[in-house]
Length: 224
Length: 223
Image 1 (tube, rainbow over the protein chains, first blue to last red):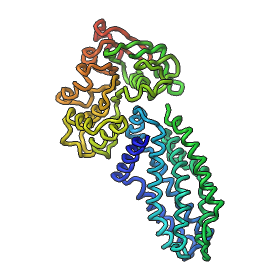
Image 2 (spheres, helix red, strand yellow; image 1 turned 60 degrees about the vertical axis):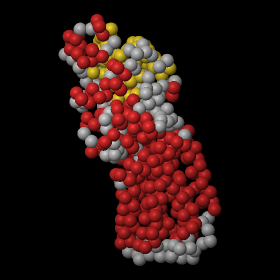
Image 3 (cartoon, chains in turn red, yellow; image 1 turned 135 degrees about the horizontal axis):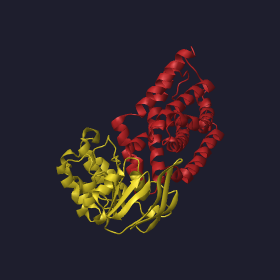
Image 4 (cartoon, rainbow over the protein chains, first blue to last red; image 1 turned 90 degrees about the vertical axis):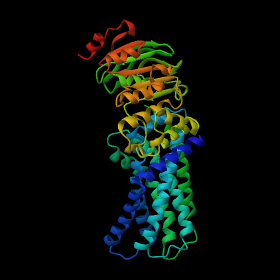
């Protein structure tokens, strides 16, 4: 299983490095959205709930771009069939795709969070950064798992670009709520010591539940 | 090796394969003829485990499908219209990826690249290679794991005579593997066949030993 996941992940990252189809688009979308918010809100800086909301909604929609592209190369170029013909555990693809999406999200956030701090955020991010990273990582796991599940579900449909967001967004709302509520105190004018534990727990539980659901149903999604 | 009994496969309401029954012994070559849309590719995909039968029974390599599909995967080599390769990756990267999925060594990859005479172009992305070269990489991919059963969908298309000669030992009659080949070429197909299946609109219109089939019967399938 580990060898298969490594092979799939290596292939995934290699294809992305060659095509640059997902990560640059996701990052550019996030930065552009922050610029739009900057002018649309007519405010030089935001903080607290407002800042957390802008950050998470932007990250969510940027993530959707990557989710929509996640299985496209496999579907269009026959990689799906080749994988299905191999004598390997099919859950390996779930894990590899989720890890690839997680990597894309981390790179996205490496660009988006500094851009957000520069363009919109009032309070300094310095002190809050370690806590923010914990929240981001917990939410990223959820987005990666749910995104992979939905992408696999819709990739063989004709309207995959429409169906992907329609299915993923409702499932990701709890992640956005959890992420925003956990982040809000960190982005306040008076910096909190740590993010609220109950929202971290909520994110963790959501990741776990969807991780188990994805593991249970992924094989069936790949079947004819 | 292959046993089909009353195989039916539908796409929505349309029956792509209807009541197909046949038996192929180990080492035999079954050649499937029929016009476009007759169900040839669907038959290959059912045999490869990629599609399920909607009725009837399918046994491949002694295993019942779809229940024991897991035991068939890895023992079948499918060469379809699509090469099942990533255009952005090089031939070597593509084959190494497949080698890792089939738990094969990097030496096997080099061996196959040499067999299809692409060692010199192995570091170029597939999208820069000609269609014939990509077809050769696809042959290397389909035979990388030495499958017991080869499922070949018009395998000689896109290949010039030199390339055909090159890959003949891998997928041709001398490969001494059980083969199911779809073909539109009556004389070429017949020369390879032990058994002939003619499909028309998904239904078997001809099923006989190759030596008892006249090329005109195959031509009749296309009228």
